[in-house]
Image (cartoon, rainbow, N blue to C red):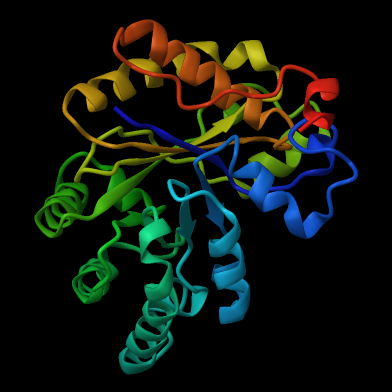
Length: 287
């Protein structure tokens, strides 16, 4: 019974003297992060080709049970309309080759498609899934509303992913859109985060959740309760969920993750907590 919890980043200015001491060099923070969290979204691979030596350095400093969730390059996921298919496939293959030495510490690699990627591209999404040849799990995130109709194209997407053993990424942005944007971080989040229906359907053994929390922590409780119940169901079904917790400014994301894990523990008597945050800045500085 394991839940992998992580953030969308492994360092944040507000986490200094909490998750890691200020004296710790920035290059060493991922190792400290991996002592608290069990996974992380790596978005840098979406924007650019990360040097292989850098990937291996990250791999070498985290614990053996840590899992990286790398995002596929945007040249693969965001250029399906305007690039030759052979070029997309080549970039996908090159990316997979770069991940091969890291397989023992790979979580669900993410194919994250933009809102412009509509039902006309479903076949290409499925073909990219077919090309996946690593032993680690693969996940797919779609943002076009055609994939949230509960019938039609969503049914085709879910059926295709389930047949291929690919996990659907479940986006839950309800909290961050639950109030008007009364601060800068909410304004920014509501501009950038997708507002799509939350359909918590697992299509394979490693379901992926991306939870976008509200900066007013108490407002998240009802959704965290729902997720604690769903995660408990998945654990009972012997699935291994990965949960990436964001907040509008990501400062409180670790706290939200710990709160969710505590709620799961209360529902599952045999569940051993997956996440324990430092209790204070003083304790963190003693690590």
